Amino acid sequence: METRKTTSTVTINAAFLQEIKEVNEELWKLLERTRQLCSDQKQMKSQGKQALELLGALRDQLAMHFALEEAYGYIENPVIVAPHLTQPAAILRDEHTTLYSTISELYEAFEGEHYAGRLDESAPNIVARFVAFDKQFRGHETRENELILQAYDDDIGVGD
Image (cartoon, rainbow, N blue to C red; front, side, top):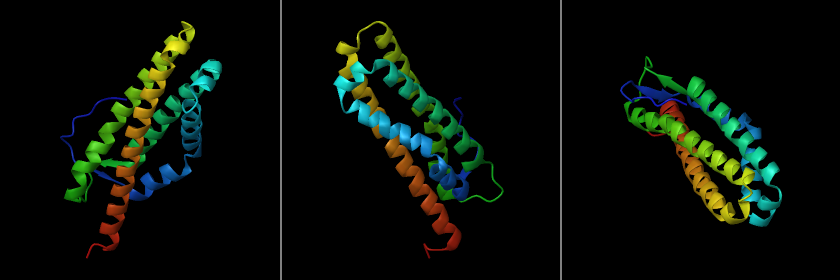
C-alpha cells in the first residue's frame, strides 16, 4: 500500500463501496475466526502454526479488500464533487495504508515469536496488538459506512 498526499479531490462511489463490503464474506469470516482465536491465548499458543496461517490470510484478504475499495469505491478528481465528503473520503482512503501496515507488522511479530518458540511469553502482547488493530479497523469500517449513508442521503435528498 502506498502513501498518498491528499492534495487531489477524493470522493466515494457509495454503491460500489457498499457492494465491496457486502460481498467480502471471506474477510468477515477471517476476522471473526481471528477474534475467537485471540480470545483464548491458550488455544492461540497450542495452535501457533494455524494461528499464523490465519493471520497471514487475514492480512492478504485486507490487502485485496483495500485495493478493491480504492479502485472502485473511491474516486479521485471526480467531475462532480460533494465538498463536505472530500476530506472524510480522503482521510478514510489514506487510513488503508496505516491499517495494512499494522496488520503486516503484527503478522511479522507473530511469525518471529512463533518460530523462535516464544509464544508462551509473547501471546498477551500479540493478542493486545490484535485487539487494538481490530478496534481501529472496526472504527474505520464504521466511518466508511457512515460516509456511504451520507453520500446516499445527498443523492436522494433525504437531508432536505
